[in-house]
Image 1: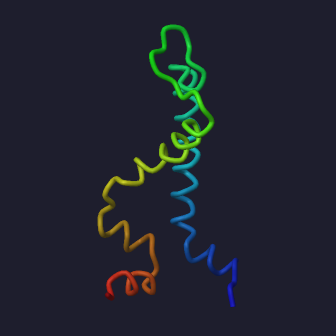
Image 2: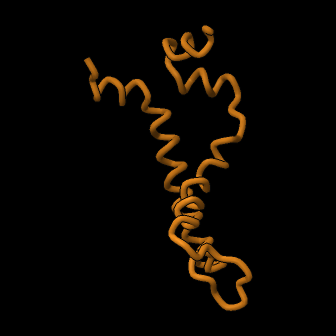
Length: 91
């Protein structure tokens, strides 16, 4: 059966990293909007996200780019338990 407490404890490092990424990206989006008025189109702003769908796509894809940075093998071994590593290595 699914045990939430055990699952959270097993992946606590991964959850901490993803939480930090989300918080940093919220600050990044706030600064982007404050500096460039990227969502409302400020004075002499040549491009901004006009529709709700454009804003939604930008907000969803914005945090993906920092996650694409390669992670060294040791960091992956520390993040994931042995069971997950074995499942990742087996075809």
